Amino acid sequence: MTPRTLIRGGLVVTAAEEVHADVLIEAGRIAALAAHGSAAAASFTADTVIDATGRYVVPGGVDAHTHMEMPFGGTTASDTFETGTRAAAWGGTTTIVDFAIQSVGGSLRAGLDAWHEKADGRCAIDYGFHMIVADVHDRTLREMDALVEEGVTSFKLFMAYPGVFYSDDGRILRAFQRAAANGGLPMVHAENGIAIDVLVRQALEAGRTDPRVHGEVRHALLEAEATHRAIQLARVAGSPLYVVHVSAEQALAELTAARDLGLPVFGETCPQYLFLSADNLAEPDFEGAKYVCSTPLRPREHQAALWRGLRTDDLQVVSTDHCPFCFAGQKELGRGDFSRIPNGLPGVEHRMDLLHQAVVEGRLSRRRWIDVACAAPARMFGLHPRKGTLAPGADADVVVYDPHAEQTLSARTHHMNVDYSAYEGRTLTGRVETVLSRGVPVVDRGRYVGRAGHGQYTPRGLCQYL
Image (cartoon, rainbow, N blue to C red; front, side):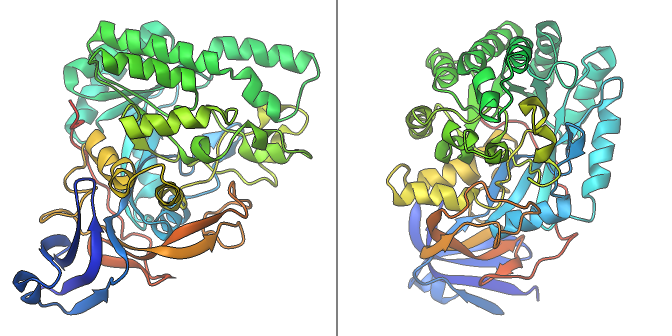
């Protein structure tokens, strides 16, 4: 007999419903759900019983935008696949989709193989890959078809970072056309990198070197302009479009207008744009460097538009863009020149909790919390219904969540491999208690019991919103 686990007495919350139900798990999958106290629930038998009375029982989070071990700016993101996925599990995330990188002059296959080598046997939770396309040419386009067939079904193009990842409009158009033909989902980092580089040079020549200038030169209008341009290129190509890390009200307005036309255009935002602001970039004594990321943190007035976009479904997903660099020795590379500060923030551990705080504050409903953090990313990237929901046949990626526990975020207590917290001292209501990945405990009542290598590579299907 296969061992069974029963989670009893909790409020099951999915994107579709809330019900007091018992959840039966067998062979790594959800075997059955039944209303608590019903005859069906009474018939459940199990080897292990988890009492979830007074708790939520929710699907494991799906973070569809992480960068473990990513090289950038002369250094490498400080979380490995081992440390980063462990931290993710602590925060109730049970699947990540990371970005494999094609090097200029190299093949997609070589980039994907390099990322498989980084992750294989090291992850605490399940994982998949997007593909960053840095060099569009005929061979690259043919490779895109092959990758879609084997479950790498999304491709990221950069309109920023000339000389590193940047693709011009012609290359972007060709990649979009190929995705339209093979069913892949194009993703874009939408900033006008050519114009931004002009503003960077002008700022440095004027002696403006502080971290806050990073946000000023990466102007919100240049995010909006690139978003508009990406949408029009996707229209010409007949392809869908997913815009990553939307931070500016004006960029969101471009997405909203496109969606009002019925176009298959989607967007994500990240907790840093919802909870932090340009005020953090302006913190004195170079502390603002901790908050340098791209797209940059915006003035606080942009936040209301982003929350509204989440409620109206003009933004579908909240991911982290987790790309941590330690303050000591990494962020400090940019002392005296903001353009040399490695771009990225730590966040994979805190996404579920920060979004639950939005529930506490009345910004999101409980079901919308689960939608933007679990179900929508799973659907967007071809993982649903295996991931992102609690239903018979789904992977038993389950979080028992205490909605009343209080916690204070701090670098002293987080599990990410980085020496600061972007949310230092922030008090939240709600905390992960127990986490199962495919039915196997990873966090057990606040104690880590997982292991490197439990996580499996998960090929993905096509976007389920198309």
